[in-house]
Image (cartoon, rainbow, N blue to C red; front, side, top):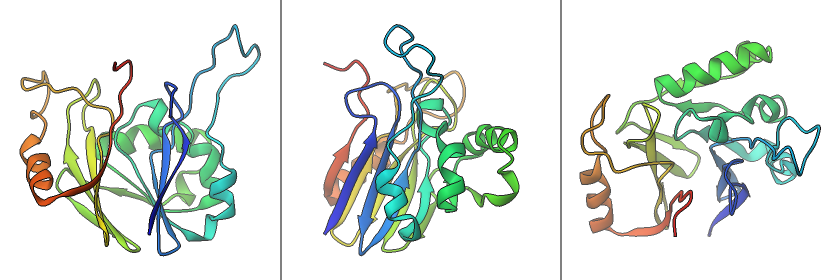
Length: 195
């Protein structure tokens, strides 16, 4: 079976972090933080995902794949990477933002970073991850197609359907349509403020 575990990001804005487990190998999707509501959490600077589940499987994590460079998707990595030591994959801008964070935390030399482009595929254990160009309020955002032995899981990442973006290309809806025609096992869609 394919197991999906959410470590944050459900029913909240922030802490986006999910894990896909197949054959005992774990692929982490995003690893974000949340900024606290100062009225409810005085004195708290950052809210991180619950990493207990990840620490129990640290030797099984084969990689972390990123959708884009916003804090709620990458901001917790400097706090978890010292305990996981897994390779991280993301687009150029996403990794550029992450590199600054890793330098600040003195983790740049100990972190394995891999730059990907839309349409690139990377095999991590039993799954292959494909980056699909998306539009969002930050450039270099991508959706992910996670090809598992049981079928394709689509993770939308954050997105907006912008056919005339100020910078870059429109979203690659044709690739998503082709994947839909072939059959999708599961769609995971970010949906901030959606009704």
